[in-house]
Every structure is written in structure tokens, then in C-alpha cells.
Amino acid sequence: MKTRKNIIMIIAASALFALPSCSDFMDLKPTTEYLKEQVFEDAATTQSLINTIYDYVIDAAREHTTNGLTDDAYFTHNKGQIAVNEATCSASDLQWYGRGDCPFNWSQTYKGIYYANLVLENIDKVPEKAGFDLKQMKGETRFLRAYMYTNLVRGIGGVPIVDKTVSDYTKTEEMQIARSSIGDCLDFILKDLDEAIASLPATAPLGRATKWAAVSLKARICLHIASPLYADRIINKLDVNQYHGDREALYRKALEAAKEVIDSKAFKLIDCNAPTVAEIADKYHKITTTNNNELIFTKQFASSKITNQVNKQHGPNGYHNWSGTTPTQDFVMHFEMEDGSLNNTLTKVGDHQVGNPYNGREPRFYACIGYDGSVWGRKRAADGYALDPTPLGNLQCGTYELNDGTDVTVNLPNGEKVKFKGIYGCDTRQGPIEDWNGSWTSYYEKKMIDTSIDAANYPQLCPYPYIRLAEMYLIAAEACTELNQLDEAAAFLDVLRARTGRPDTKATLNIRKKSFDQAAMREFLRHERRTELFMEDSRYYDIRRWMIGEECGNKTLCGMIVFARLKNGKTAKRPYIYNESTWDYHYYVRDLSFREKRKWDNKMYFAPIKRDEINRNTKLVQNPGQD
Image 1: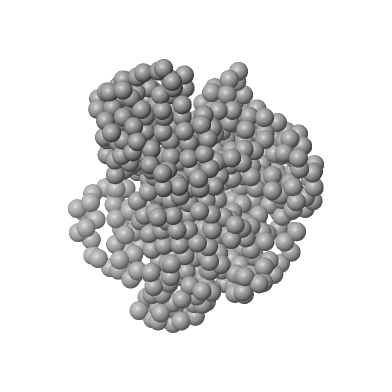
Image 2 (image 1 turned 90 degrees about the vertical axis):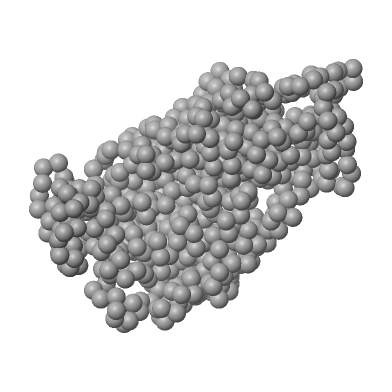
């Protein structure tokens, strides 16, 4: 934790823009109490401080997020994610967990909590002012504190509950705070949320907390703590990380809160149904790239200082983007087919086929995944357009035979080399445009990207969806499944699936030759949740709370090799344009273990606490195995 002097300096800086004159402010006597009074003597400066607290609720509109720490995705440029996925990080070497992009970063989150505590301790002293609702401001602060504690609990387990500012950071005893149990943390979060619900309006400007955001967060945290991880006593051996309460009651609370949001009619699932799969996919894609009635709580990026650059950070290198977090082969094959069946081909290293494996997929696949030959959504820059003169850009993630090509080599998983005259696609790691930024998996994340923007030069204005209505349906369905209310669970899932034209739950289980029982419904629900919440900072926590780390964390990291040979009698010259009548397309599953040899260790169910924090606060207990 920072010194008092630094904290006050940060508080002062956050309020400067709301004061009449920066120079006048800096001329004042630099006593910490006076600075505090300066902040809380006016509702406007108090609101500016609350505004800074929002920034400590970390979004996933970033180059590297928890998504790359799951079987859904791979982060191209490391940034400490390899150590997490290989389970080599520790308390003395946090790697990605120590970065500011981690939503449960200890020092960063507690700094946000400090600001929240400071506001709550002083807001009752703030004079009333036209245009400012102090009750609402207090509700916002309680919601934000609850959100930050939710992030800490989901990532680390039981943590110290700090509900007031420390009066003197030079007194060591004031820094000695033990970790509270999961149950106590949950009670604290729920108390904050209940008070926020009573204080917040049903509607607010985009990006600000509302009553319904607080009810939704209540549903999320109750479901999370009700999950198997916190009931386990074999792997989860640390008492503060164990829940000793009534899990069934928690599932009921989660269901009740989720239903309250759904039944409020304050939000609406976007109906994506349309005559064609492409049109359905386009409508679905807009759910996470535009402001709409499905979004409950968002981060907005309308400021020049706070930008959403996911379009550049995750987009294809052939557009001069960075291909940061890219989908894995495992996740690509996870999507169901148009009829609801599952395709289990091309899942293991060396699996191969001739012919497009992406035809006949469900609409969400096309909304979420950029793959070889798919339309990206924008004409390329001049250098790329010379190679791909299509009006909206066809992704080139492979190697293609051309009569006027040069010598190219494709290295197959079995060690065989395929050589011919051709070109490497401009969205590959062998291509002519920023090859170092190409995707290793041969896929690109599309779901959170406005592909119409010139990402190399401009950020996008897409909001980041912290919480949306679809999650409430999934929470309600999961709670019902665990309570063995299977028909009710199916009903919630059916509403969600129907909006993209998916067959209903019972019909889909029948197609997959599964019974309609609790085990099959649990598997079905988890599959649906993984699909629906892709890239929304959910999978990391789901793997842990469901205790499926052994299954998911040990998967071999795989991508795809794509190459195209001219059909008999066909000829073609540059520029290359995807065409199944001219080329035979070959697909081989590729082993990417040389990039990241993923290995699960049960210690990874809970992230480590930095050793410096343990040394500073001797009452802290480290998570097992993370010393």
C-alpha cells in the first residue's frame, strides 16, 4: 500500500480539473487534512474522485486479459501469461498477475478500495449542490467497492476486509490485517450491494452504476461462491478459501437476483433472428460492439484519454494490427454446428481434412472468429489491398499455390514438408506485412472488434460489457440446474438460444444423444456459457469455480495450418482471392507447445499474493503452493 503523502497527491490530482484554478490550488498550504477538506467541501470535486474509482474496476478491453489464461485463447506476445499457463509464477514472481491489466491485482485494487473508503467516510459532510445526488453518489461508491472486492475474491480467495482508511501508515500495527473468510467477504460484498441497490436509480448515464448493475453483481457473486471450488476440502485446503455456509441457499439467492433483473424488463435480449446465418451473425456481433438494451453495466470509451484499442491490439497483422489475444483451435471447434450437433474433428495435433471445416457453423461462430477466407469488414490499406483487393478484406491465414508465386514451404505436424510455388497470406507470420505480429493459431478474435474502423490509426468506441443480460439468463439456468430444477433451467437457456435461431435445449440434447438429466444439463449449460461469454472475462473464473482446471489447463495449445493447392486443370496468378472452386484447401491441427507448454497445477485455483505484501503484513497467509 502507498504512503499517505502519495495517496493525497493522487486525490488532489484527480480533483484538480474541477477546481477554479490549478495554480490557486497548488499555492495552498500542502497539509494533508486541508487537501482532504478541499476534495470534500464540494459535491463536484467529490464526484470527480468517485469517477476515478471507476478506473479501478478493470475491464477486458485490453491487449492481454484473463482470456489468454484459458483454453479459449492464446496471447501472442507473452507479457507474463506463459508463466501463468505453465504454472511457474509464484509469490516472488507474479508475472502477469502483477500487471495492471489483472482485474484482481492486489495493490491496484486496494488503492481503489482506499478511495472508496475515503469517499464513504466523508460524503455525509459534503454540502448539497444542484445537479448532484449525494445518496446516489454513495450508492455508486458502495457498488464500486463491492465490485473490486468481488474481483479480489474471485481471483485470490478470502482477502482482508478493509472498510476504513488507515489513519497513520507509519504505524505498523495498522497494517496488520488478516485475510477474512470467503463467507465473511461474501457477507461484506452483499451488504454493500444491498445498500447500493437502495440508493441507486434504475437508470443512469452510460457507464455509471445503477440499481440493476448492483442486483446483477449480487447474482454473479452468489453463483460464484456457491460453486464446487468453495465446497471442496481436498484440493482447496485453506480455511479462508472455503465456504462453510448453505450452498443451496446461495444458488437460490443467485437465481432470485438474476430473475429480478430479467423480470424487471429494464433490459432486453437483442433478437438476432434474420433470414440468413450471415445476417444473424452480424446482429449478434453488434451486441458487444454497440450500446444497446442488453448491456447492464459497461465501460465507455468516448474520451480521448480513455480509449478502446482492442481493434488494433487483437486485429490481423495484414491490417497493421497486433493479433494480441487469438482463439485456440480447441475453442474454434467448441462451437456447435447449425443443427445443434457438435463437430469433434480437427481437435488433436495432426488431425487434418481437405475442404472448409468452418461451413455450417452456428451464427455465433461467424460473429466471434476470424478465420482463413472469412470477411473481416474493412478494405485494407494500400499495401494490403495490393495483396487482397476484396472490398471488405478476406483474411489470408494460409499459404496458397499460384502460378506466378515464389518457392514456399509448409511444415506439417508429422515433419513432412510440402513445397510449391505460391505466397504466404498477408495475415500470417510468414506474410509481407508485419509478420512478427501474425497469429500463431491462424485465427483472430472478432467478437469485441468494430471491424469497420481503421484500427492501425484510430481506436474504436465500442463499450466494454462488464455485465449484460445474457449472463443473467446463464446464471439463472445454472442455479436451476444445480437445484435440479431442470425444466426451468432449460427454459432460461431456450430464450437465450432462440435469439440466434438455435434449437431448444431438449431438442439439442437429443441431437447430441444426451439424456435430459442433471449431469447432461450441467455439461450443456457450461458449454453454452463458454460460447456466449467468450472474451468477456468469464472463462478464467469458470474453470476455477467448477474445478475443471485439470481438464482445461492441461490441453495442448493448438492452432491451424492452412494451405491451398490448385485443383487439376486450374491456374491462378496474384492477387490471391479465396475461392473453393479454384483451390483445394488443406487443414492440419498444429501443436503450439513450443510457444507455451501449458500445464495445470492445483495451486492455480487461487492466484498468489505478492511476497512483499506477506512480508509487510505478517497476518497474511499465502495461498497453498504459491510460496
